[in-house]
Amino acid sequence: MIGSDGHEMKQDPMEEWVLRDEILAAFHRWPLILVFILVGSLLGLAFAFLWPSSYRANIELSIEFNPYRALDDLYVPEFTKAEFRNVDDYKHWQMSQLSLLVSSDFYLKETLNRLRKIDSYWDSIEVPELRQMLNAQWRNAGLWLLTADIDSSLRASEAVETWTDVILEFTDQAISNSRELFNIELSLRSINDELVEFQLNQTALEEIKGNLNELAITLRAAQSDEQMSQTDRMRLFNLIDQANVNNPGRQILLDDIPDPNAPSSEYLNWVEQAIGNIDQEIDSIIVSVQFLQDEISMTNSEWEAGLQSAQGLSATLSLASVQEDQPQVKQVQPYSLAALVGAMLGLLVWFLVFLVKITRKGYQ
Image (cartoon, rainbow, N blue to C red; front, side):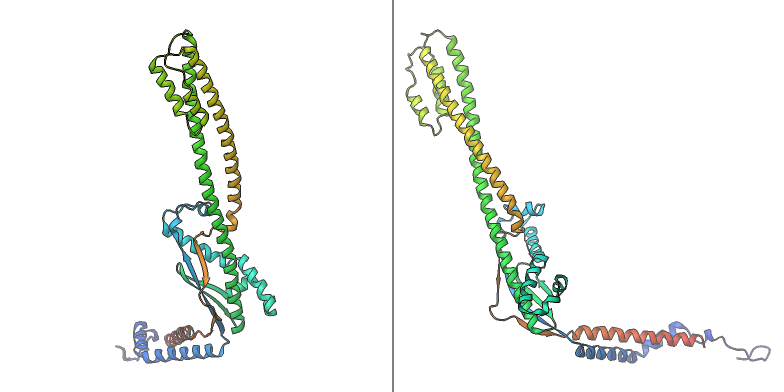
């Protein structure tokens, strides 16, 4: 460039290019970008082909669950220390709990112990490693897919079969314990109903006894030859009749009530006999109430002891293996993932080349 004084002026290198123009120019050469992406994908596919792949063995489990008793079961809320407001929450918790159990140390230790009896390969494998190999895929009740990913098709098949056996055995025992808990709950309800009935009878008898005592006081104050009024006689009869619950002795007492013209002294003796009869029944009820309370306490202890053994699983839950033949085994080759990762790396390489190019150009 020639200046106003006739001398040649040097152009600033930074003015020879604009970053935006360089970026636009680079994207206009999009076939080159595609070449980088394609080469990266091909290299990823080649890597996936050459890299040793694992084998995946599958077994389907049928999970059936009837939540009709969801809000009546007492043992599950007690185990979870939470309340379920609807059936969907209860069902989701059951499936989540089952998923936790099948991958728990308790289940996997037993699986590993059985595998070690089959193949010495498993002697060097610990529970955390086994947990990474096994997986339970589920969305809800219905079909669950149990998988084992291992570098040997035979070992993958052995692992998923053994794991399935452990799951079916352990959950079957836990569900049986849940059914026992539910039966205990039914017994508790029946005992509680019986206890409430006894207590209500005791309260009613004590009230009747109080009324009879008041009447006895009135009779003692009356003259011995004075006749009882028809109203008081009917009141007395009704009181004893109300207390006449499953007691043949009081029916005999009603049959022996004095005549309407009998003096007060005869009625007093009869009332005192009725009070003694009621006292005997109250004592009998007290003994029955104590027996039922002891039985409730003992049954509650049995119920609480069974909570952990049921593991929170519902009594209406059932598991079964869908297939009776050998597990389905296939080789796992992550071509799609390898191609995607290779394509991303190819794009990254192109971007790095582009950065180097414009950086060098800016400093020229």
